Image (cartoon, rainbow, N blue to C red; front, top):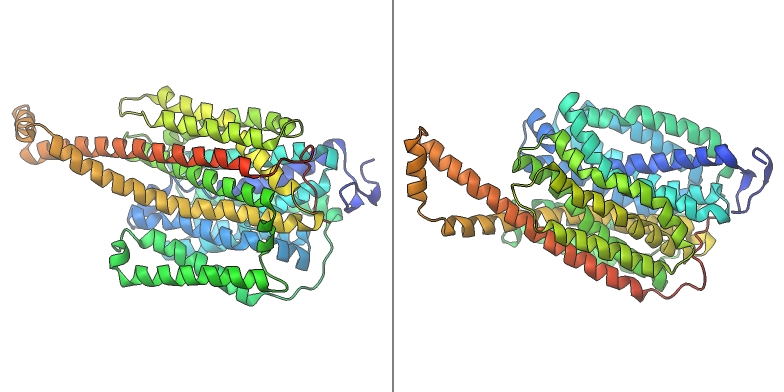
Length: 516
């Protein structure tokens, strides 16, 4: 009965919830995850507005995206240590409160430097919210309802990156870019209060653990250097720059030092030994490949629509948000199927079909209308839950109960790091492909001087005629580069789909377990 103090089925000593209170707690936890993931993409369509408002270039404006992702990636794997040291509920509610505070400061930022600093702090606060929302869901829900809990959580993970551009575009067009951040403040406050009131009885056990300062420093060092290298590489002419070379060397040495230290430390800040579990390691690999490729498309599409096809931020968001509608429908169905079928089959099906949709997108052209653009997005949403739900269930179901918090943090780390690195690598590859396509298109243009003369004859000035031709070539070059990127994304997802079979066959239905 709700409210009865007892030892719950998931190992938490506290008030067992059922019925409406149980699903209310589940909604609150899922909403926190939604908000944290949302902020990784809500600024995507806002970059031109932010860059204009703060008088910086759009390339500099992308720091607003990557600074948050890197900071989030650093704190996500620390979640297991934080939960054991301070208690999962305390860390979760504190992170929510700080997330709201730093969101408000982002909106008040008078300069790009101040905004990036606040985005870093926002990401540091948002990182623990992702795995802890999952861990606490599994403590609140009884084992028999664990697949539904994972489905609810996965649905927010699926929908949030899609809803981000839509909400961000509407807020930028109607209220101004600061509201992209202000919108978090009341939500974070409400969710923190509700979590404290409803989930405190499910607090985890606490014991004093030594701080792995060396492991933490190495984590920050290699992730930070790698991200700066990827962000600044093209601008600095890559390895022709001594700065980029130095960052690359530090990142590589820091990474190997981090791995060696964490594998040999008695009390590591990140439990890399979990990768010794084949099912968990395979799930992490599939998550890295698929999400890294997927998030590139999430960033690329709205930028392409706004810069080449003349879409407003709102309409670009409406296109990208279409897959959220079908994803919401399919997430609970995917959660039910995880209990009945081998998750490897579901992952292979879901990611394989996502690859086919990406290949479909590689035939886009500049004459497409809204519905022609939105239909592949809508189709994509049907298959995304068959990636997120079974991969998460397969990873968490392979772990011991006491490893769940650390495992949730580590699998989320692979996802957020893949997203951050993927955006930097993807935008660089997209830019390089555009330059190459522009050069080829300009060289293949038949009698450009005659075309320019025709434009001059109908009233254009010589400069305007040349400008129009250049814009036409550039739009087509971006289109060719975009299609090329979709082919690459499709290939990566196809590899990820096949990689699911590396995992061992589960010995029965996959059951995600809560941390004790």
